Image (cartoon, rainbow, N blue to C red; front, side):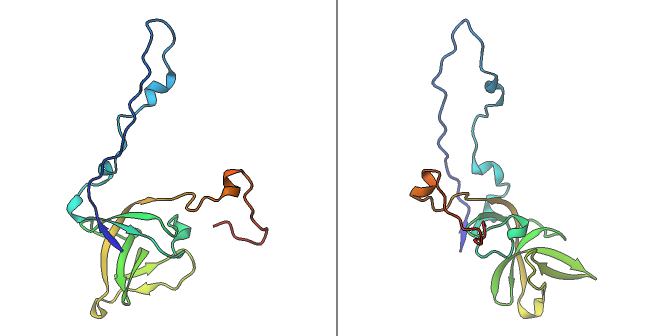
Length: 157
């Protein structure tokens, strides 16, 4: 379930176009970046893990089934942060809420809030720093042809 972060190399395609001495340079050249790397999102590799989200409890906060979460265990959890917690015997992704000095795990999907209880072994495991979505996890031939079939009563999530 938890994957320690390892540096990966993302291939970068260098521009093969040469500029001629005359003509108009592309306005898009001002927006080109050298390289997009996952390494740039990781401040502390030794304490950073990649976690895959399961379930729909956090969909209201933009975390969906199958998302990859970048979790940093060295960050101090604060009220309002999205955290990974070990609570009631399972690992959960929830929003941390503090009420009257007591830590609660909440989800926007209407699930009941869970009170953190250290005597039962509940711990805040890490803070979610980034989420990576997969937009089309299972492309089908009908989608590729632009004929997606969705019934009116079928949820679009």
